[in-house]
Image (cartoon, rainbow, N blue to C red):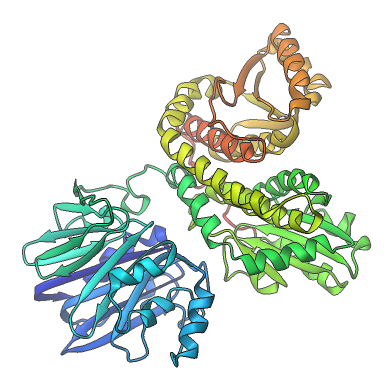
Length: 578
């Protein structure tokens, strides 16, 4: 992921306007930033790793410039991997948003032809492929979810949209390009959203678009002032990031590289014992994964990373595999546990959203979930993308155990695409349903969230979200445990949110628990397709993702109702590193 911002003007303007645009796109990436510009007929580049606030651009006026703020999905956070990236002759500067599939083969082909690479990113192949190639035709050769823009020494500024948003705008003698319409406030009054597959070339005060097959034209949009420009118009990062779940699911699927999935799956399948560790949301994702791995004949032990040294470390040795999950990759309990396990001979597989984190660096193999930057403390899209990553890994393990086939893998990819589309089309209606239930939850002092089967860990996660986002006392329980203690509070009007099971074996328990809880006076709220809080219909394996989105929205809207500091719950931080 990344943010693109550029301009092409008849009269020179301040290069520092690029930084203004990039600061409004920092939600799309904060691992590095830079700009390419034309000065005196020479293509120059200024860039640095780290937050865009630290980018120092020279005080010069130029006619054309192109900037980028990076989210590191492939390649660590280094100066060399920061965009813009250059071709061999330093005459083409490229910035890329998204991921390019199969780039290793392209890189090998280009290197064999004499091209010299200076980074370890997938994006650099675009710069070298553009040498002597038509950019629109080049895009057809690439696969993945990406957009790229390029500034050349001979004065061309062009871009291609293939799955990541791009908008263009004109104001007076200047034209602009950006990843988000919000960044254009103060630069232009109208913008045009490029259709999928379009090629655009900017000119001073204008642009030319070559539509994709089908002839869809750019859609005109009004540029309005957004009080929360860095949140893309959403009142909170949490809500924005929930709405990004569908896009994140597609990005995760596209970014996971087969060679690392195969390597990780071989390690898991050949292990003597496998421990899955994490904290909080990551622990809940690990609990869901135990169902995935059991389905392919490879049972795993899931344990809190905080408890791991006290419970499992004595059983760790050569042949042990630790599947460590941390969205930030910096969770102290996880890092301490993997270091202790490595000292005793374990192999570490890391699953993280940060490729520059300690977890990624200290793992033998790591799988980046590539959900994109997540600013709110309550994890949302990183949870669903982690579930997806673990499910895909389990399928690769299943190739070794004989429980899954290549046809199954292909079908899974199609099912993920279908769920992403269904979620994108249902998000507003789900949000409205959650808003309608917020009063009911806000009026309660305590809430139970109960589930059974593969959605049981999601009940734990839903309760965690209500604690974090709404500051309500919420307890996640296994549905059968409702009858072993919690039911004693039913006569006091206890609210119980019950997740409709997706495992057929849990149906009888679900019906029994609902009947008894209602008879005892509990306020029962059902969650799932057709429930009080609906969820998008999904098969058993993908239901945890669907249910998680509904519970996230329910927690968010309840938090709004009670006036909680949703993005920054008191006492909590994004990564616990103490």
